[in-house]
Structure formats: C-alpha cells, structure tokens
Length: 319
Ligand SMILES: Nc1nc2c(ncn2[C@@H]2O[C@H](COP(=O)(O)OP(=O)(O)OP(=O)(O)O)[C@@H](O)[C@H]2O)c(=O)[nH]1
Image (tube, rainbow, N blue to C red; front, side):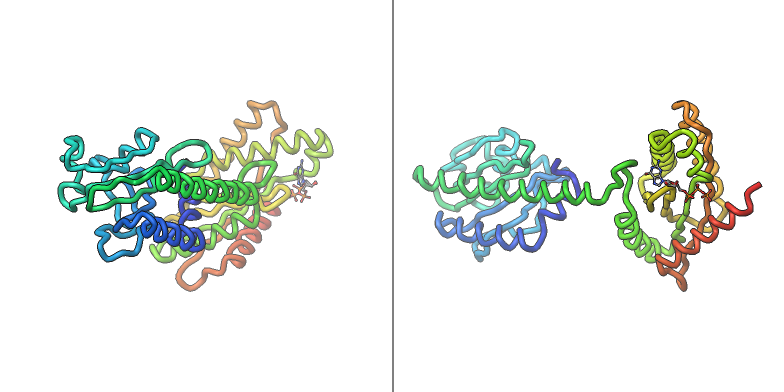
C-alpha cells in the first residue's frame, strides 16, 4: 500500500506537510527534545518526511537512511510497536546505530504509524542527546498525535481511491476520456524532452451498431471489454490507453519513427480475434489510424483529431 506512487505524492501535498510540520515542531518543544520526526518506510530506505526545525537537529527532511542501517525507527517498523530507549549507549544492540555511535543520541521514543489497511507507513518519534524519563502523559501524547496522523492517512487514502475511480471507464476498467487525455499531455512532454516520437492511435470498431442490434447490448458490452483487454495485453508499461466513449479507443505510445505501429496493430488484431473466439463472441474487427508529434507539432487535441481522420480514412477505404 505504501508503494503506490500517487498515494505517496498525495502524502507529500503541501497542505498535509505544512500541518505535519507544525505538529512535529510542537511535539519536539513539548518534549523539550532537539529532534522530532515523521519517518516513512519506503522500498529504498527510511525517509525523513518531516523534521523539526531546530539548529541542534542533525537530520533534515528529505534524507534517506538505507534499509540495512540499525536505526531506532527500523525496530519500531519491524516490531510494529512503540519503542522507548532512555539510555541507548548502555544497550549493546545500539552499538552499530549511527544515531547513537556517530551523532550521540541517547534517548528515543517512537511509535509506529500505519496505513488504514494496517501496513506500515513509518514512525513518529522524538530523540534527545541526554538520558530522559518521559512520564506517562508524554507517552500518551505521542500516541495521540500518531492517531491524528493516521486519520490524515485515512483521508489521503480515500481521496486517492475516489480519484482512481473517477479516472476509470466503468465498463472496461481502462482510463476514461478525460483521464487518458490528461495523462497523455504529461507523456507527450516527457517524449518531447527525450526527443522521441509520440504517437496517438485511434481505434474504432467497425459496424458495432449492427452487433448491438443483432446480438443485444450485453454482448456488445462484452465485445468492448474484449477490445480493452486486448489493448492492455499488447501495451507495454509505458503505453497509455483509454476509452474515448462508445466504440472508440485511444492508445498513446512513444517510440522511434517507423512502421512499428502497424506491427503493433497486427498484434492487437490477432489478440482481439482470439479473445472474441474464446468467449464465443461475434467476430468484430476494428479500424485504426495514427498520427505523431515532432518538435514543431505537438498540440494534443490536434494529434487526436489527425489520428481520428486517419482512422476514418482507413475505415472508408477498407475492402
Ligand atoms: N453495447 C454497448 N454499445 C455501445 C456503448 N456505447 C456506445 N455503444 C453503441 O456503439 C454504437 C456505435 O455506433 P456507430 O458510431 O454508428 O459505429 P459503427 O456501427 O461501428 O459504425 P462504423 O464505425 O461506421 O463502422 C452505437 O450503436 C452505440 O449505441 C456501450 O457502452 N455498450
């Protein structure tokens, strides 16, 4: 759950971060501690998401500590339990902890923060160079602050789920028109920066109305689903596909100049044919047309419209 890039992006939204920063600054002051953090457990290490603003704090936000480092937060995440170490230099298990051996921290109090599904998000913690004896109220306070952060994570997660649902076409589960066009703008910008060609392929079923009329709408729906499945099957991770509406689909692919789009469409034709056959669905075929950007021409709406025109021409020329 914590590896969803959209969710991570949302976690870092300016509003959430500003609020969490205030919480951490206040927490460190109440604990009279030089250092307080929200640390996020990520695939590449423990990342300092928020650090209190205090000149004595040696760690700042943005730093990533490798996964194999013996830090306090790692133990909290792995045990999924609170850790209170009052006098770390007397405990051998921290001999290899650079926070203790290199930076001179003695005290650590940290609690686990979890995503709504219970998986690890990271930790909320305070650290001090001196030996501490926090009373029960302070220990309760850090747990209470953690509960508030977890409430924010619930909101972030729900928002992300809703955004995801709003981007999908409910019938085929691929991107809807608005999402695919928005995402394509971003992909086009990347392709232009990398001096790659950016292709739009417009795909439209032939005589689909007759399929609905002859076999009924539910069969028509299955055919549309079959085409979406076939498009996904031939797409690479980098490609983008969506349903424009009705029986029209779009693919956006970046690549070199050349005839490979026709090869890709041949693979799609074969995949679609097989899917229809396997489900005992009528043999429907599609027409396609494509257009590509270059350094001089990159208006997306125009690109889609050119691909549409090319598709229309192919459709009218079909035997
Ligand atoms: N089953 C089903 N049909 C849909 C859906 N959305 C649109 N349609 C139908 O798709 C058909 C599209 O018809 P047209 O645009 O005339 O396309 P066509 O019959 O394929 O004609 P050509 O493209 O010229 O070959 C219409 O009959 C719509 O009712 C859907 O979600 N499910």
